[in-house]
Image (cartoon, rainbow, N blue to C red; front, side):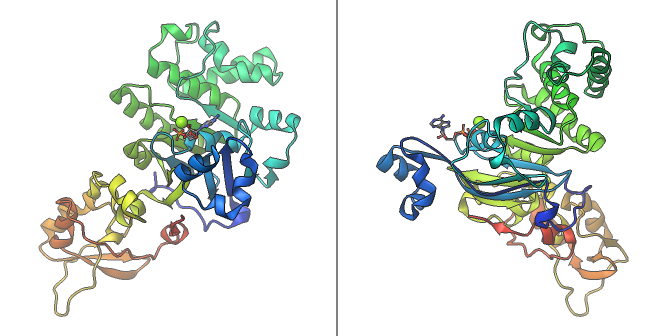
Length: 373
Ligand SMILES: Nc1ncnc2c1ncn2[C@@H]1O[C@H](COP(=O)(O)OP(=O)(O)O)[C@@H](O)[C@H]1O
Ligand SMILES: [Mg+2]
């Protein structure tokens, strides 16, 4: 979704959700770990060996912009579920701050937390978490019932979101009568019914077959376009992350390795771990022209064509190869450089080109943090 959405520069005040120095440590006397420099600096394995504590989340800081799809990606055990549960304090953080819509979440009492979880956050889980003895319509309206809304209001709202997620006609079925993909649509509808400010997804499609999974990803992209909700989406799947994420936070052993747009992770991996992670991605599908533009050579003849820096290499391939001469890459009337057959073919043939991105748009300036570890 990166290409369609433009955000203003992310100032603190504009973040919907701001996480600073977040830690979750499990184990004996876990509370001291973030505050004792010699413990905080230890690798996860070493810390476990020396203290019996697991640093599930280690010193994470990031902001999520309103309307953004923020993906947290990492292998199993990297701390994703712990992180997303810390955000609503289903798991109590060990240290750090969480500010949501200007409110200090860590200072909220139990009553306030319940209200927040009912009205501001909705979660979609891997194993759907549907109530087996309730029909689809009653699963979807459950949250509204808990909130004390009247039956006609609940029904109306539930039907609205059931239609929105493509479940029309299935209202009277029980969950077990539906396929996995359909059950997760119920999960989506239930999350949307509350009209939350942010949707939290914890690997919602991991249990689904690959085809259904892709269909559900497309569904999330469509829903995001239609309802524009802020989403924090957890996944271990890189192609899912690239498809959905405006930005991606890559975690390893509880810590952040890199935070950036998909093209930044692929085009400028922060370290060998990220490089290995993104190695098999078809680069032409992810990299944009800004990553491969070069300065014109003296006396070089240019074609009449002009392309923008955010065009995907895949989309520009034919035009550039057919033009006969290098094509200009122009942003806001300013010539950033040119792209010829060589540059295109290097990406299409998947040769590492050590790209040098031209950081001209507000979009790339905003997301240009690079390595965060
Ligand atoms: N309640 C717990 N007690 C002890 N260790 C835990 C607990 N929950 C998670 N962990 C550990 O924290 C690490 C991160 O787990 P998790 O957040 O579930 O990762 P992910 O969701 O990325 O697979 C793992 O090493 C896991 O074993
Ligand atoms: Mg998990």
